[in-house]
Length: 347
Image 1 (spheres, rainbow, N blue to C red):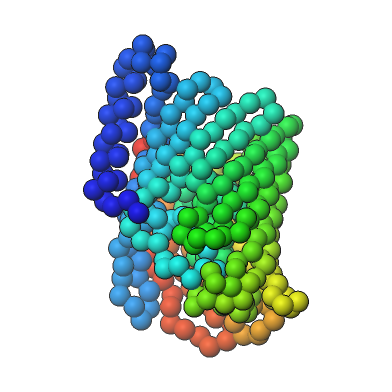
Image 2 (tube, one colour):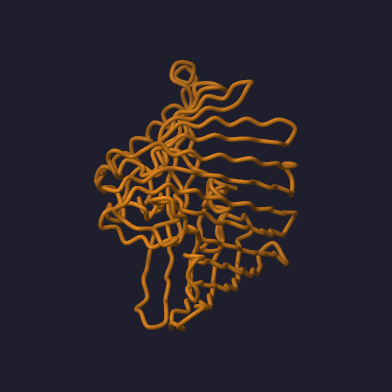
């Protein structure tokens, strides 16, 4: 796992390469061009009832793209490993520290786009947008680590007349659990490339018994230590005209073990509105039932947000309050989150 010293040196090398290549047309002809594709800094302070506050930089990243021509390119992003969101199915420890959050080669041709390496999975609404575009915290589907944001694999993306399809064959556990079996994620969607987008994400894969033995996963009543076949799905519709962003999402899945199946479900409604260029508010309803065969275990998070944005839209100060409602026994775990989203290269 890359340490902080390695990451700092890697970033320095990439920046030096970008500066050198951009001023040398002759070098451009030989090795292509480098560009800073993503700079995201999101310092966040979260305070919850009954717990001390925590400061985090986990949703921060630096990404560089190399392009040989309009067809061949590569992308490398460095950030907190936790942001890859390794699914909870495995008995591997939670990822900590910093390293590669995306690192893939890409070829774009007439028939589509192929990527190979550590890829964005693009599952559901949160997975389909860049983190620099997300104002609220991750939804419960990802907070509970039911699905991941990135994984090692191969993808094929095609698009025609607004309709698009993406097929991803991936490892399931990134590179953290040896002996992983192949997972498949597929997206079917449509967009008018302006304010409307709809997407259906489907995912399936196996987790071997030895990979989950001793894991803390209780999603869908799974029995850790036994081989499990998972199926996950999410359907969302996104409407985003000027100054508005609205999302409706329905998600769920099941696990099969020894001829028995168990399920979970998740639903979300989110609306954000900017009243002026600098001031906006938002509200989100986020429901998650970790085991549909058991009662009184669902969780609902209702969040309200205030956003203060700079004139050039590269700096957004966010205050988010969340009321957590448990279906059974109530827990004092309401949350106040204050964050500052800096995105100088993404606008």
